[in-house]
Image (cartoon, rainbow, N blue to C red; front, side):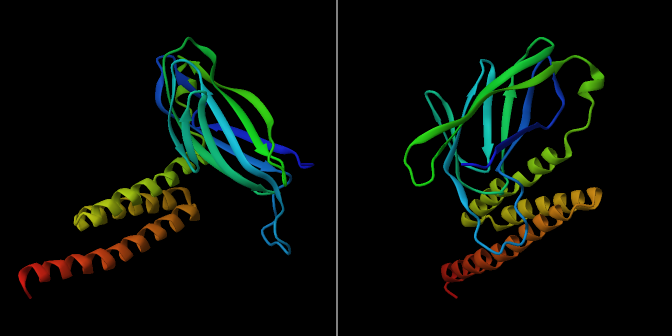
Length: 234
């Protein structure tokens, strides 16, 4: 592993009030080596297998949500399964915390342990260990600072997958209108963000949601109608 392993932690807000906050989000990004070029002539090289991130929250800190990877809670903390890493490939996840009250100042939130398996070996090695912090304050100027736009965008886009699952459950249980409304409202919210921020990613996400809604309408609408006809003896 000759490439440098880089990690970036970004909170959605610069500081939180001394009384605590829920939710607070952190985006975690990682990469081996320089960013990969968009057009590749050869297949990317695997530089790390079965990457794992172990998170150990401090007392009074709750890790409420993990978006973008598989995870499980253990006696030693939360283990996040991050999969293989290719040279130059950037990956990211989103973490959701609930934070209890603290005095003003920099406070430890959790410990992070990054480990991986060496290519062609089964041995797991520790890549890095670090303590993560956030600023507590009662200063209104700091608390009123706008959210980090990149993290805010990740939060908004991360809402799509669980919402699609919720809508699908509604369709499967015969509540097609409820499922359709969930998807339509989310698509509309994404389109508003796309127009407000002039960001094509929001528009593309809205397009995906609308296509899924159309697909579910055809699939479950037809199934529901056929069932209704069979029940009425038509």
